[in-house]
Image (cartoon, rainbow, N blue to C red; front, side):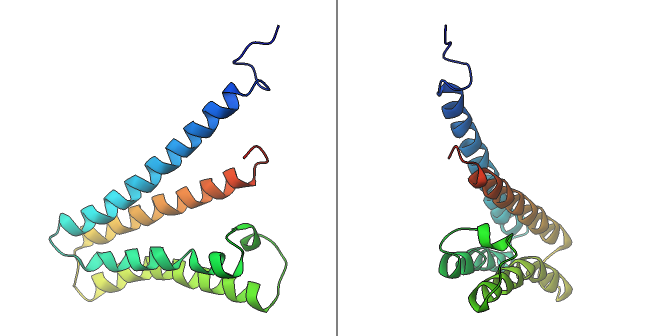
Length: 139
């Protein structure tokens, strides 16, 4: 007798999909909340410049990788693929550098910089989890 909660019946797989998507949405929301809190708690909106980099990070994947992140971990190379890898890395480093530069220029407080770093770490974990989940064939 097949029970509906056994693997292969589809209910567990569907529940897992919603759990994973819910977890990813929560992580992304927490990252965005920390981004706003870094600005609001210190009454200084300079750290929002990092949000511009968050918009720029996926652009090379969308333009040169066909909307997929699979080329970032592959060993294949070519002019456009190497350019996309470089631009993705440069914009990701910019997400770390902007709060550090703003702190060095005394435009933001140390607490805001640390909150920005935490926000970036959570966002990177979210992207890595999404990349791992998108590699699965069940999706």
